[in-house]
Length: 116
Length: 118
Image 1 (tube, rainbow over the protein chains, first blue to last red):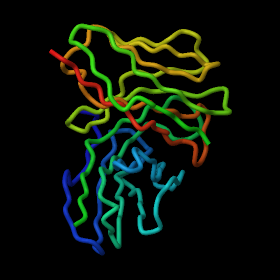
Image 2 (cartoon, chains in turn blue, cyan):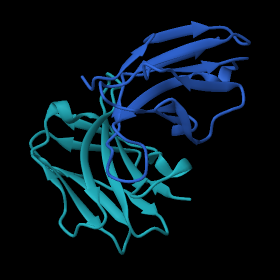
Image 3 (tube, chains in turn blue, purple):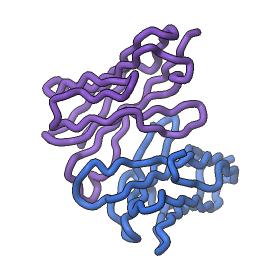
């Protein structure tokens, strides 16, 4: 158990819908990262938040957005869902996220999103 | 941009034998971190081992060790005395050492599926 929690574990929805994925980082971790794992694209970085602020952006679609709340949990919002958005979405957390150091990222169990 | 390549999609090993998983990467940076992550059927991403590029010594963690060849940009994972529980997908990943903004991410290879024969 990494200490990172994600809910829900599974999510099945229809095209055009909107969903919210939730992540709680390990106690004391200030950074939250979101990754998408799909058969086509592999594991891709989406976005990072550090202590409530967006720190880095990767291959995140405009239909997707995220935020980190004062209690440091994070939500990833996916809207106007398409079949191709079906994937495993991981959240990871690390202590830092500032400038340097190993800042090992600990991964949550993932949320499996299926868009029908 | 950094890239990570795992060219072998699948490998198989006999229980108790040794197997080596290959990974190459491309970067213009001189300092960085390399990682191997394990993803068993449970889907959980588990950190197996980490290597700092500025360290000459290859990292080891129990039955897991790496062969880090910086000049060749090669980072292979050796699993000794393979066990049934080692069966999983293994991902090689890269992260820059000093990061601000967009390069704080992990860049992953496509992964390799390792099966262990009893």
